[in-house]
Length: 81
Image (tube, rainbow, N blue to C red; front, side):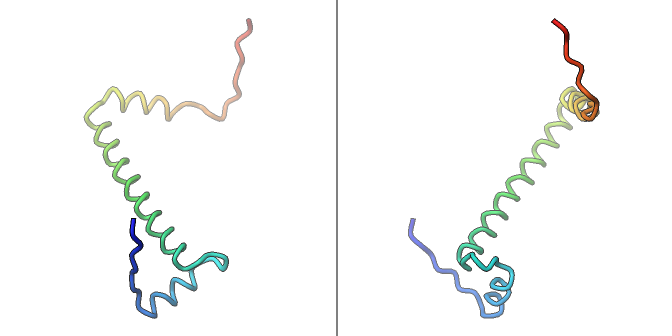
């Protein structure tokens, strides 16, 4: 894949430089921002799709409600052989 140059105005470069960790390049920092934003958008879309799935499938929604109400902080009693 060919490299592409994206031009940023001086003020945006200054802001990005202030935000980035000292040991990271500006290019790496901006790349990471774009990758995180893309991933976050995919997660939000997946969440919307799952919410729609739960609305359309009440039995799945009920199963999730039971799962979410499970007492996870209670101690586990092991079955005796």
